[in-house]
Length: 102
Picture 1 (cartoon, rainbow, N blue to C red):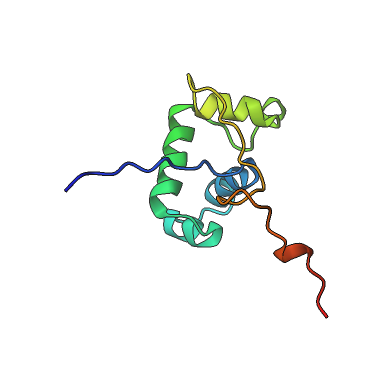
Picture 2: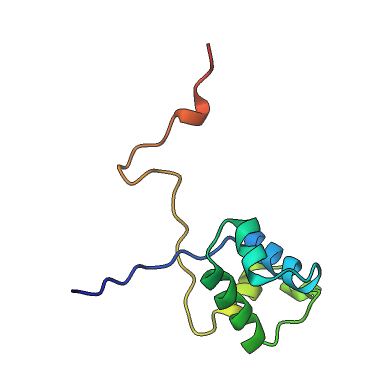
């Protein structure tokens, strides 16, 4: 069988900060954090590993309030990925949330 690699999409900075808060402030297990954020346990472990390698302090210092600074610390040597647009894979913008209920 041919092995397929999927490009993982990064967590939003808001979710990432919540992940760190749940671990370092609330003391939750990786499985509890994964369930709370609706992500995989491996994802939580990956980000915690990156934080450990980067010697990320908690609470985060003010200079890491900037998303770019935190991204650079956790993903050294990687260029910033472009954000996905609000359009779906078909190229059409979803109108589900903009429809009025009758």
